[in-house]
Image (cartoon, rainbow, N blue to C red):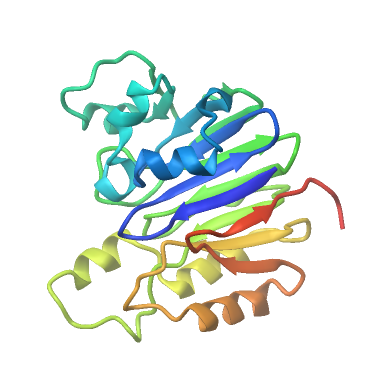
Length: 239
């Protein structure tokens, strides 16, 4: 299974998980033309799209992708935030109820963000095992078992963020690097192969420093920052 990053940040988010037979898309904040190119113009292999919340950098192009006949999965609160869209191919995800989307099993959990009903996801597939995906949250107060891959927000460094009108909003809605590290320290990383850091702020983060700090607490993991164009093979094998 290959991870393809089409965008990870305030300008647009989109992640594709793809093998020869199927694909799952997380977020639709990148223009559909870019999604088409990444899939070699084969939308027929897309099992579904899951969306964490309704903000434009994560969900701007939901209407375009629905028009292409793709199924979209999100919380009821997220769906209700979209105006003028019919309900055809829109599917509601609920906490505690697994969703089978092709070969992907998707479970959801609540996160802390200024959106209607934002979710993080725990996703399983035979190709890559078990993965947690969480972006745009103040923290993640949960522990997960038997993880193989972690895709997690590391938005800003408290020591870098400037005093501005948006400062308080960032503090309340995005994950600071120390919080990201605390989550990693609180979870069992013994079988984790990859940790991918998501949604780094352009002005309030330090990519190399973030990678180094996470590597120190996860020395046996492959640590990467999600950047447009990144492609990564996700495997389901025990070290």
